Length: 217
Length: 411
Image (cartoon, rainbow over all chains, first blue to last red; front, top):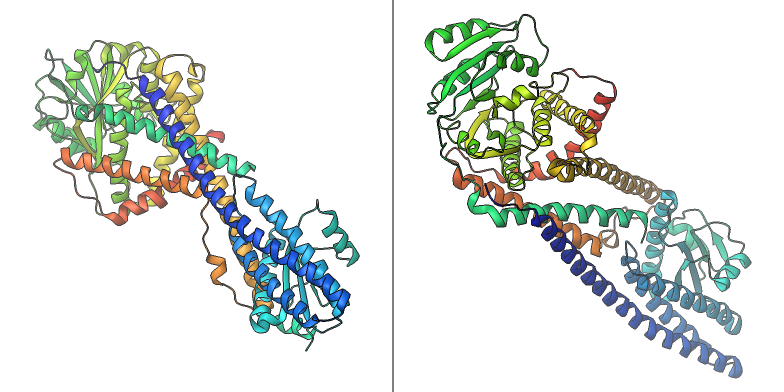
């Protein structure tokens, strides 16, 4: 018969390891590319937020241009909302921590925006609608996972109806954020997901019509 | 990296390893797959056919074997295991027609094929002893394409390629694909001395070894697997001749198919436990066959568990979100829900699947080239084989473990 072919065991191990290394390398490249894209969005959003924050101080000092400030907040929130939709696609089964870190940075940025909205409401005393959506990233509990899906859909309906006249900020809650947890505590929110719509807290799945009742104008 | 992701990686790695191994063996040996050797001398051979209620096929089996072109075939011994149908009468009629045929009957029903085979073997004195089934139909040249492998004094057993005779029902068509792939991969195993079963439809052994190991283990549900492990553990080699084609009747009913597979798997477990001391100890049986069997089973069962877990979670989430969506008067499905963002695991899965499909297609194409009886496979049957039929394996395996745990050793 044919001579010994035991060497194929090592060859197969080598081939498999090579395929694996190439796969992991390509996978990392793919994720890196995504994280870079998120970072780009993030950098732009960070600049826009800084701009709004500075403008907020100017408005506070001069007590003018509230209309522009609210408009800026609305536009920025709109941008943030659209980016959140893109980001949510990259949530599952990531190998590196890049995407997770980007999520966290975004959460903080959105928290900053939320605080700014609170300040703007006090500074300008004008009527505009703010909706803060607090949710968990990849919850293990299936009920919460399903609830969050429906919360998102109802809010999307609301956003579609009110277009740019609503500040809708989705924030992924991370237990390690002191600032965000403090805000949650201040609002006496005990369970997630939750919606804070013009200072009213909703923790049960609402319909769009129910949410509309709490909207101004 | 979470636990599930780690599991996916381990699964993919082991799966890819086996696939690479088979592919490399194929690439090294594809010119020798259909090799056979002319016998250096005319080895004398007797074939034993156990028969229990095999009236439908026994006459054809006898005829096919009697028409064998191998001149060294001295005797065909048909053992009636106290059939309750008219098998014995048919055999006796055949005995008048075929000179080489000897019909014997066990004193009482042995309850399994191994018992009848051993009984028939007691009438054999030739250098080689072969076994066939009462529903197996070897080609005219099957035996002559096998015996030449015994030129090598280290070869203890030679087996054949089994194909499915009845391909008129869907379940048997799918099994036809399975049998071709089994024969092909078994041949690849042969190149690394790792053939772990000498099939029931047609296998030949050196009689001295057969006697030394005291024949088939009558307590084992798969005596053909057990005898092969026994032969291998004693340092003998086992080969398969791809040109030795034998046709068998595959089950046409799911219930019979499941029963047959339960028996095969439970017998496999019996064999593994019987030879557990060989694990990582002696030759290919300890270093490859044993770990291959065990890892394939663990992966199969664990993989099924993982798949069930993921599907159940997905379905439950879909059910809950649908119920909630109806309550919230919002759309059940949106474009965002079906947005697809593949991860590296997805690409690994796709690569593995593609390579697996290519390997199987190549195996089938190879069979087509060499076999005159090969019928082109239907694409639909092939899809069902790969995506449905193979998924039944782990379920059968779990049921077999249950059968084994209950000590249900019935046929």
